[in-house]
Image 1 (cartoon, rainbow, N blue to C red):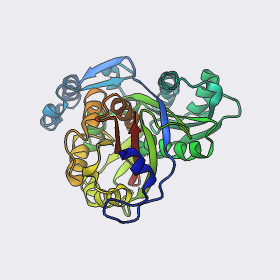
Image 2: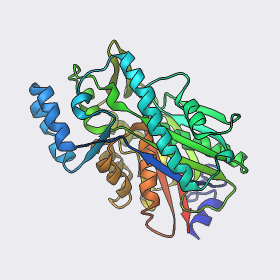
Image 3: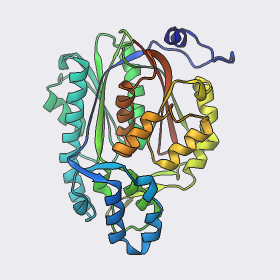
Image 4: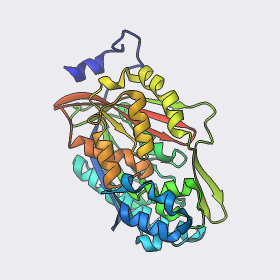
Length: 366
């Protein structure tokens, strides 16, 4: 069987030694949540043109890319274009991020059929706000999780946070097969939008980002089931710290997205993927972070992928946009309902500040 071969073999197809092959961890449940304000791409373009009339020509270049796309926001888009002070951002983040995280977590737990008493670890990823006690504490209290549950908050992984959280949780699940792990990624990037910033970085952020949360329940030592995690890989690209991230300003977070990011990925990703799992073009699916059209096209091109391999990513990019760290969980939820075969082998990939590349081996068997 394809999956059994992938699990047992420690060699790549060309005979080279692969990374150590661990016991797969089952993703027993998946859940996502989006806020109530549903906005079409054409509406985003119209309002941006009103906000920045001088940028009308630049904004119009994205018309085709954003046609028939949707985003979900925690505020009506008219309000989303009104600046929030850092203090107001913090208040809204505490309320909105917590509500989205709870909704996604409840759906993942229900999907898994897991008793909350069986959850021994909670990993929460978020980078678009800060509150102390954290969202993880609110989840423990609201969901009625065990008071001795291990908590692992991730703040600095950016868009790679969801994939990193899955990787860390899967490592824990392998050594605790009697318990389950809950992973939650929640982001509200619309709260950080700065209307006075007419930079290309800020324009790009409002065009691609949406608010939302994703969650997964993981368990080791079980039947693989719908979809599972094998190996995980992490790589910090040398001399790339200025390619992606946030800069703190007086009115909040300033988005940093280098125009060189697609080229950086094209230069480094093929070798990383090849060393990790072999030829990506030979895999059944690629659960790619939907970071925007330029990112998806660059990765598809440099890895020699087909449209069918990244179909789940494109569907998510169109339906909810880039929800930062939560986006990979939206893609996995879509993929789990559109698996191309009864059993197979795939790859999850996400990218965050650093530049950090997170890779996850995906396996499934009915």
